[in-house]
Length: 131
Image 1 (cartoon, rainbow, N blue to C red):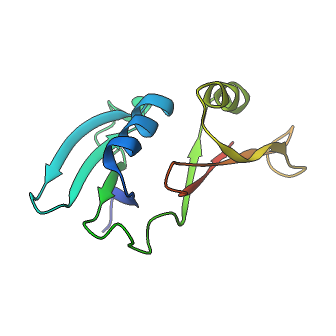
Image 2: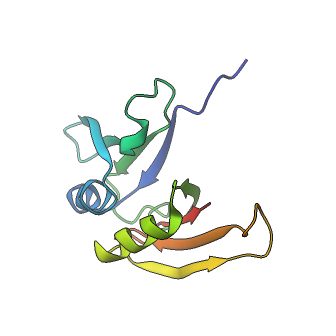
């Protein structure tokens, strides 16, 4: 039986720029790197709270050799959560994370309602921050 989700991939054009965003602005931890020597590189990162979790889902930042790869800059479908979404939203905004949808509270979900905001990385990949 499947036990967990091991890894997801985010396609980027410039790996160094992506690393600055994911480690510098989002605060993720860099785990490992792979370089095939032919123009393709991968770096694996995780949120800091996942560092002690053996089953944490890793994020592979993948810079394909083809910088026009259609998978770069897509809606990722990824949803991140935070213990305190308002504090996280304000902290990320102060670090320069570009939000394409500001934090909103919905009338559904656990009282006082679910909250969410949408942000993007330097390549245009979009993500949801949600309670």
